[in-house]
Every structure is written in C-alpha cells, then in structure tokens.
Length: 465
Image (cartoon, rainbow, N blue to C red; front, top):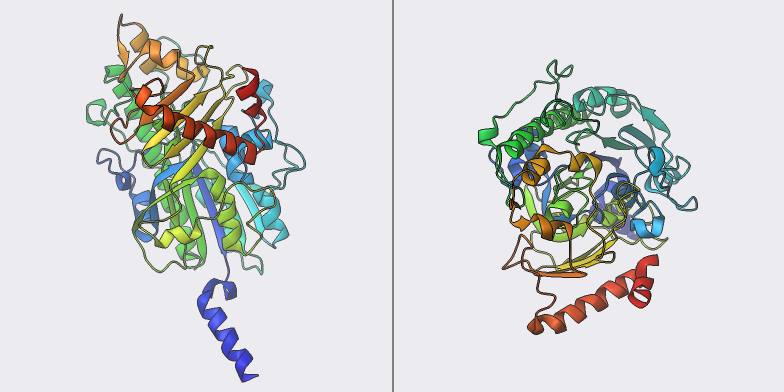
C-alpha cells in the first residue's frame, strides 16, 4: 500500500494539472498581423497582449495553413488541413463551403471529455453539426469588451466540468460593402464616431504608423493602417477584460489561453496569399502549469497543431484519429527547440470566385510555394480590391506595390523558391536558377509527401497538369 502511495505521489507531482481543473480559452482575432508591442511594434498599443506574453510564451514562427477566414478556422477546430476537411473557403452566403459531416471537431471531442463548450463572436464554419457548442453567447464581435462581459457567468460558474471558451472577435477585419465618395470613408475596420460601449478608443495618426515592406508607403496606405491599428487596440481591451475576469474568478492559474489570428492583415500581399505576411502570425500561449514565464520560443508551429495541443492539455486523445497536427504544449518551456523546423500550408479558395490553389513547404531558411493554377491571374477578395491602399497604386502609372511590381503580384510563376535568410520579403525567385535545382527537387518531393500524408486531392496535379 505504501509503495502504491509513493507511485501516486510521484505521478501527481509530474502532472500537477491532472488533479486540478483544466479550463481552455482559444482567443481568435480576425486578420491581425505581427502588429503588437510584444512583437516589436512600438507604434501600436496592445498592453493586454503584452501582458499575456509576459506571463506566457510568445511564438516567433507561428503560421496559419490557409490565409482565409472560414478555411483557417476549420483547421483550428479540426487539427486537419482544409484540403482534407473540405472547408475549402468561406462558409457564409453563396460561397457555401462546408466541412465533411463525418469529422469530429475540437468542441465535439472536448464535450466527450466532459467539457462545457462555449462559443462567442465570429463562428464562420459549417455545418453546426460538425462544430457543436453547448452554449453560444450573444455579443457584438466588434466589441470584445462586451464579449468579455458576456462570458463572466460561464467563467464564474461553479461546476464539476471545466470550460472550453472559443472567443472570436471580428476586429480587426476589413469591412465589406460598397465604398462611397472616398476610399477611406466610411472607415473599413469597424471604427465608428460614436465608439463602442465600454471601450476607450485609441486613435492613431497616419504619420505615426509603421508601414511594413510589403505595403506601399502612400498616404492612403498610412490612413488605412491607422484605422487598422485602432481596431487592434479595441480588441486588445477585450482581451484585458477577459484576463481580469479569469483572475477575479480564481481561474488564472488553471486555464490554458491561446491567442492567435486566423490569417494575415487584410491588405493585398497578406491575407489570401501564402507570402509571409499572409501566414506568419501572432501566437501567444499561457499554460498555467509551465515552469517559466515570459518566454519566446523559436518552435515552428501551425494552426493544425492547436487542436492537438488543447486536447493534450485537456487529457483527451490528441494523437492519430485523423489529426494532422501535433501538440506544441512542451515547447512553451523551450526557447530553442528541436524537431520544430518545418511547416506546411495549403490554400485553395477564399471567396468562391477566387480559385487559386497553393501549397507551401517552409523551413528555417528556404520556402517553396507551388502555385498550382499559375496560368491564372491571382484573384482578389472584393474588399481587398476596393482597398484604398491597392487602388492608390493602380492609379499611379508604373508604381510598385511594396517591393513587387503589380505585374509580378498578379502573375506568378508555377514555383516560387525563396532564401528567407537573404530575401525575407520573397522578391527574388530562385526556382529557375541552375544552382538551386537540387534544392527545388528536394522541396517538391517534400510537398508531394505532405500531400499524400494528408490526403490532398490536388496531388493529382503533379501528373495531370
């Protein structure tokens, strides 16, 4: 008996959370790039995300696998690449893409493990039978402070069941609709003159924003970036309110929090593309049981790894069962990692009119993109085409868009091979260079193996086209 007690104590000491509540919050924002104080942008105010990073782990190499809202969310919630789960693009209105009905999603798996599953804000996947939540809370997805207030009863509730809260803002998404009179009015990032209840709006001067290299430094772009910054700062206040609620309820020390963006910033050159600004994104995670705080990790992860990570934390099955990703829970204590040096991406649609399948393998230094439909011009999301940033470039004869010509942005080679160490902005395509042919073949073989491993229907294009 004494021997059994010793074994139990050793086991409990190694896994302290097994005897404790294990709540989970997945906080997903809409179209945020690496624009935050904790990611080195001094021009934008994100004190709540900075606070989370100071008490958790910041990923410098976190990637979505597809740069489109519905498709990316399906990857988060299934642990599968969207070419395999069938959420090829948007779920809403006439786009009508849907996940295969036989797939077991994260909320379904967690419900089976005894969790209360709660969703608030942007949903944007289909069908509901695949992505079931026990509770769906009301609240404006443009007001994360209001959303946080709506979650208080769930977080404070005394229950034998832990909670999984899927908290999704619509900020800082670029709004749709017809632009009238001026390309900058009405504001396209959800900002409005009357503000939002409970939010102290933070506004920015166009002169103060940082224009990333992939965007043109024009007055129109700066004005839109200022609007985007304001939207980011608004959602950041909601994150702060949610963290405060966790602490007040006594759940700060038993809740895994993962903060990330579904895809890149809503400007041409990022969202809908698999260039770095479209797929390399913010991700900050805090495991309440990790031994160190305020870490930065170099682990290369993707959104296919999120569901397995949450399932491992919850003590549920997180390997096999159709999952393509793997848990990154152990990396949260590791600034330098081994075996996390390569990621894959797969994008096919955004809107239904935007067929442009791309497959990517990206290592520490080299990145290969296969533009399967390369004879086609690159398609535009309606809101990105109408963006003042893009239209201002088109109106200038011979202008470049960031560091690319408009021609090279729209018409792309079949294969794009970049040395990210020497060419971080992906301008100089090495795919046709004789000295890089061996590397090209090596990465092409990796892509084919990835497609085979993840049941990608587009693997046929190697043979047929």
